[in-house]
Amino acid sequence: MKPELRVLFAGGGTGGHVYPAIAIAEEIRSIRSDANILFVGTRDKIEWEAVPRAGFNIKPITVSAFHRTRIWRNLTFPAKLLAGLWQSRRIVKAFRPHVAVGTGGYVSGPVLWAAARRNTPIVLQEQNAFPGKTTKMLADKATEIHIAFAEATSYLPEDKCVLSGNPTRRNLADSTKEEALSHFELDSSRPVLVVMGGSLGSAKLNQVVEQKYPALLEMGWSILWQTGKLYFDAINARIPAPPENMVITKFIHRMDHAYAAADVALCRSGAITCSELAVTGTPSVLVPSPNVAEDHQTINARSLAKSGAAIMIAEQEIDRALVPTLQRLISQKEELHKLADGALRRGKPQAAQEIAQAVLTVCNASEEN
Image (cartoon, one colour):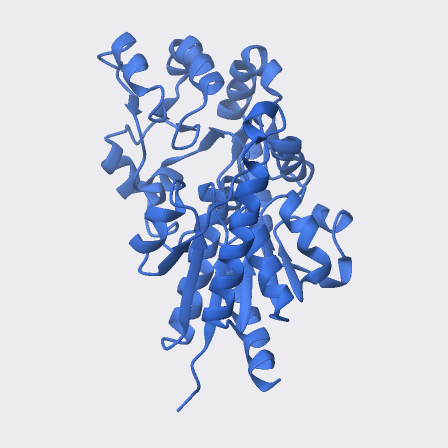
């Protein structure tokens, strides 16, 4: 009988940090059903609901982000950090992991620091082309760092970096074009523009689509517009009866249908979105958010655009450039094919499996020591 295998995960704050961790954990569980997997997170962020929903245990620590602009909000930061470090040490001591996996976010810092203090091997997974502060801070202590963009090696120890890609949802390729168009009740004779601003939504993307949708419909596009929960009610009040060939929705639950339906996606360039576009081979117009830490969305988008996998338009240019860009794409199908091929070349559909295998290899080495 194999000895118990214990794997500790730390990552949270946003879905971009949580869902890659869950995907890796699911692959570990599929390989070693006896693995004891524990997550650490905070009670007030997405991980507290997402992790138990995926069937894993989670323990809380008290920690918060350091605010770069609202400095007054940092008054409690030192006390929370000390509490988080103390709680992390207790969790690591009690659980005795063979390996600790960090997927970013401020919760990773104290947990992986506590694990390193007990000589626990650390594996990091960095989603963005420009690594987050937590990844850079822990890089020297890591056994391996799995990255999704080759550009990340410029900021991390290159000998530790493995270009594995970002773990993505297993079911992204489950749908067909025909099924997707039927699901959204879209006309099969028209190309589909899918607008995605994330679960909360993007004020700028919503604004420009609301202004330009008559021209886009006239041009020949169908539009599947995911507004996000922050903006749906207001947009729905202004457009209570969407015109023919346009669907307005708060949230898209079947992303496999969304990607299968899309001839072009108009979206932000968060790391997981970029990876999903690549895995599904979806041509995209990326509009990086200028309001994220260290402008990492611009670096992500620039990386895809440089390799011919996407078109990047800066937010300040989108009002002027969106309609001409989509006019060109609807009339030049060859460019769409090139974008799709470029995206597929960037795709890493086996990322979760590859990282899970690497984690288990580190675990085995840890068990032997």
